[in-house]
Image 1 (cartoon, one colour):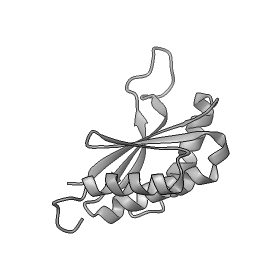
Image 2 (cartoon, rainbow, N blue to C red):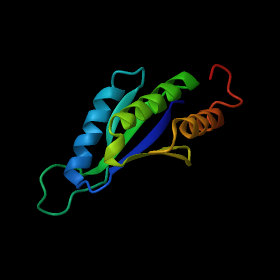
Image 3 (cartoon, helix red, strand yellow):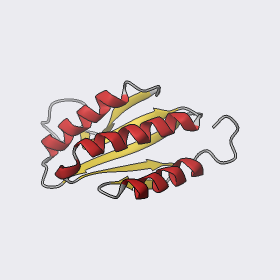
Image 4 (cartoon, rainbow, N blue to C red):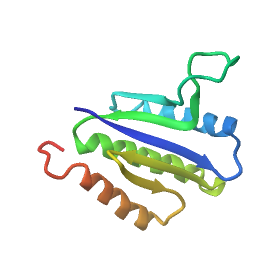
Length: 130
């Protein structure tokens, strides 16, 4: 069964429209990877009078990753790379898989490397082919 990796983006001082635009940019990059899908996270039914059938959560994405650890690794590394390009903007991406959370921000590259390896290791331990 494929896993669903939840991503939640934020940026210091950004409004919902800016965060939604950032999520769109990141989504476009993630779609270039070998993943099942990358979709905006829905927040359920819209308030009365709103247009559309579902409201999305600003900055929320849901990525379907395959069984192999390489799929998860490619997504996490793409997120890190995307974050590094907006380093001065105070961006944070919170990743969640099976209740396990990894938050990437302005930590040093060495600290992020260790966190990424631990996160991926927890989701690939004991599974052949991962």
